[in-house]
Length: 208
Image (cartoon, rainbow, N blue to C red; front, side):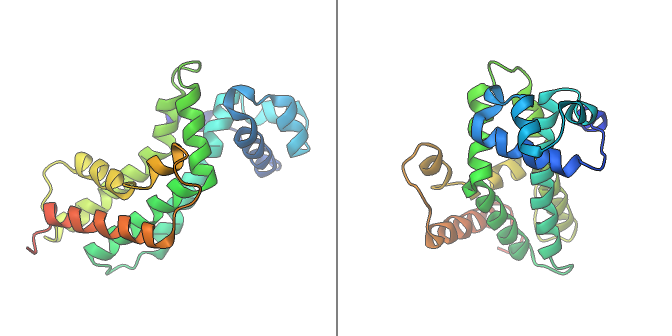
């Protein structure tokens, strides 16, 4: 579904301009509250230009999310070294996941999808496919490589990837999304990252 949606998006000279305007409006007004007039005004383009690139608002919302997740994933890939140890790979992944959860974009997008999912059926599923699902797939790939190298022994890679992603959010996501904390300290992030890596390795590492 997300792949079909991505194919439906046209790209042109003002594509980035439209995306940036849409990003501002979606984060400010939510999905339901955002309208094409506001997005066109923020992006300094015509409504016709927006509709030429994106047939409907949901595609535009998902493209904003997709591009941010892709940027995050590509930055993580660029930081990874070819001979990085399994511990190094997991630590880098955990830091990236935690950073996204703590970002204003990550928090607001999550709230939008959860809060408006009932009014806009399919939004959550599409959002997962173009965002968290992308990170999940890349994590599965890296875990699979380390299994092939004998560093890890994992029977269910999909489950293991989901487990690791949830471990990375421990003590962070609830505090932020429920308003229990306005910020998370570097020490708290380091604690969550280290705990996630240690628990994951205790379960799946072949090194004892």
